[in-house]
Amino acid sequence: MTTPAARTALDLTARLPVGDLTDFYQDLHRHPELSLQEHRTAAKLAGRLAGAGFETAEGVGGTGVAGLLRNGDGPTVLLRADMDALPVPEETGLPYASEVPGVMHACGHDLHVTWLAGAAEALAAGRDAWSGTLLVIGQPAEETGQGALAMIEDGLYERFARPDVLLGQHAGPGPVGFYAHSAGLILSASTDLDIVVHGRGGHGSRPETTVDPVVAAAYLVTRLQTVVSREIAARDSAVLTVGRIEAGTRHNIIPSEARISLNLRTQSDEVRDRMIAAIRRIAAGEALAAGCPREPEVTLGAAFPATVNDADADRLTAAVHEEVLGAGTVLDFGPVMGSEDFPHLAEGGIPYSYWFVTTTSADVWDAAPGTDLMEKFLAVPSNHSPHFAPDLSTITPGVRTLVSAALAHLA
Image (cartoon, rainbow, N blue to C red; front, side):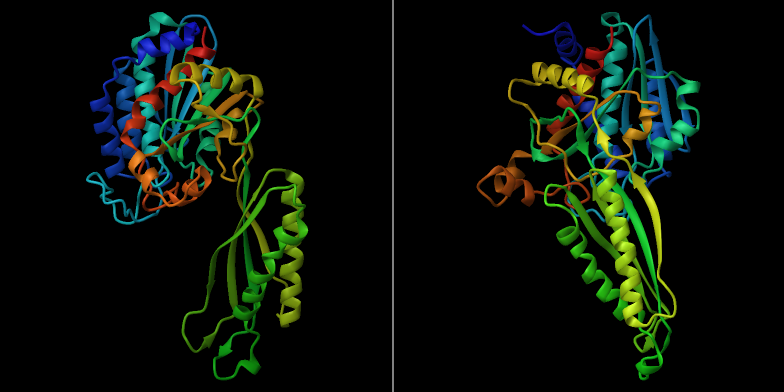
């Protein structure tokens, strides 16, 4: 026996305009926009929300969209989709590939917007079946960690409504038809660091008169690989990535400085602080060993908090998803090392449920090398890949997950 929320969700999504939503998705995919530049995407989403009867506003937190639908007494539920694309040249070969050079929806945010639009329209059309308030948002700048906080600081909840629960989902790799939930930690924290190594520049023919920051930076990058392997306990998950090294202007000029950009992924503040302390110590030590004229600069940059689902909210959401999408479709893979700015929307401790929708097409999955799930999972294109191409068949279930989750938390 299914619950009323599951039955209603199936009823409201039984006749989704799949063709129209597919066209909407392909249009968004052709026209990706980088963080805080999502003007066209925002306008497209706002138009659909207004057409469905939502009180709609654009420009929230820069380029964000908010739509409010009051429907009697009951809880206030927020549904969120992020809208920004990435500076990635597309290599999918799709007939609806990006038309913007060097920019691509390589993380599925165009699909998120499509799911949100479809869910908002279905819930608005079926408002006789539920009671409460829906707040739906198209969030800018998730990739840079700016958008959620910008919307909050722009008075999102004061101007519209303060939610009782937040709901969000993300496209990811994996065979179509699975929904990943964790009743607790599901995504890790992320911290950016920048290091400037100061040397003494000069002519390439006279290295003895210089202090080469490139050599010092090379030793530093190598030594940083020991932070996780030798300073973090095996029971703790952590990742340190050197994403960028910059130095010099010409072949025969020893530069005066080298710049290194790092990203850390951690699942606790204690591990994060330990890693940062180790990075500072190692950077200072390598600079001293190289004879650098002064200590390196280590600067903290953008940071994403860990995403920790409210256990009760996520169990309720996962249960209705299994009713609507079928037994065995909801899995708990445990926390992953990816990061999100979604928790910034939980200002003041609002409970939330965040989950993943697998989107790899059957032909891509079957063709991937490997004999077990994990081997194939590592082989198929994932988020941020220039080959990332979610299967169009996920449009309907992605709408259903949002609709059923909303109904489970509404009156």
